[in-house]
Image (cartoon, rainbow, N blue to C red; front, top):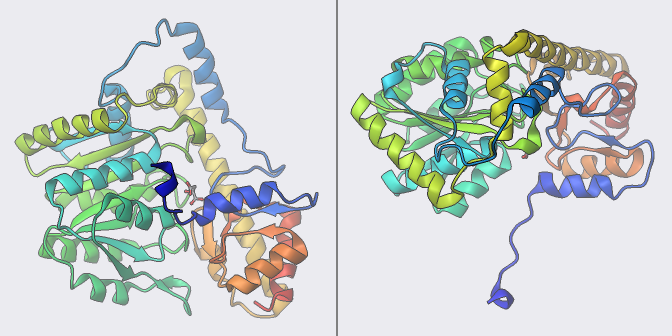
Length: 395
Ligand code: LMR
């Protein structure tokens, strides 16, 4: 059997992690995978998380199973963080999944069960795993225009025109905030306009929200998803705790399904629990426990976490402003001004694959082959090194 396997396409982000590790140059700079790094290049454990771990270590008396859908208090805390009061609780079903990726995967599995002919609309460009997971699950895929390469902002007209050919029941993947990889996001009036089109056509949004708190703020970043949830009959939401709690390896995420009625939500809940059981059984609990303790503000941990998150957010904005200023000085133009208006960890620099490889070869700077940088991988010193390498590479 194993001899007959076909080689699978490599994931460019996972591959880049390995390539970076294999480079022996001491001054190498990692702007690849979306992991927050402080000014020393470390990915620290947030102090609120560390404190929650200590409390948990003392308190936890069993490692027996939780619930197949995951612990209720965790799911309730995440639903509240993401949706606020935008949807009535009796229309909400949810499962704890291994990370936000697990939530997207379960959303696809749910779609395959409920509507196998539904097409999944993915932004062009998007996080590569959106496309490859939808393909893996066997769902038909369509792409919609998202990014204006010239203006380096959202091509909203193109997006709306492409979505005009979506069918009722098609699933539309949206990035809740901090679009990956472009860094360009819908503004508030665009979210409202999009909601009208989605409602009129009967499209089901699947909002992937993995960076809440990294863009404009914890509440501000939930504007889009809450706006949709307030009025649409159905919406799926994949939430990740990996980035905003810095618990990447703990795999804590939630898939939320807002259904049309309480009855439909009960059926969705039972189906989601079934999907957990079929795919991996009980979800991992450790990360979810920590997140729950923090969000429930045990010993003031919520405030501490919010403060840390804000520090991270502001530091990324500062790095964006520095890079854009450095490039303004080097090029005598404002063509990299978009870096400071983008939000979140990522921006697409506009570098060709050749330019990306040239920067890697000459300056040991690692970014994804499409020219995506993780801004959090920079520090005050490496901003200048990147800016110089970009100009040398002809950007
Ligand atoms: C990224 O885009 O770099 C992150 O979301 C990590 C991943 O799993 O790809």
